Length: 131
Image (cartoon, rainbow, N blue to C red):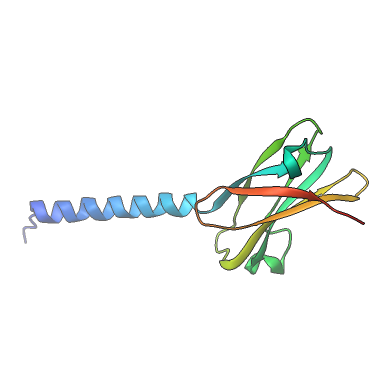
């Protein structure tokens, strides 16, 4: 039996392959959350350890699942971050990115959060914590 590939079949195969490639690129892009941390009133971020994590998703079962640690040297006005989401992490409408700035001794200095929107960089403002 002779199989003949005509123009329509070839175009269908190429279009399907292109669609699959685009879906994989889009899926890979949505698996990373990029953002910027700033301190209130555009002041310099104090020296300390910054913990950035996802809240309000299925990642809450294990707090270490979606988290990144950053270090502030006390000389910059902003810090950029990238948060990797593991495969299968479900994000809901109430999902937030939370940032906590702590001194070396573990004392909480500032905290901030922002709602998570798809494919948009997150901007978090750190506000001083009052005790």
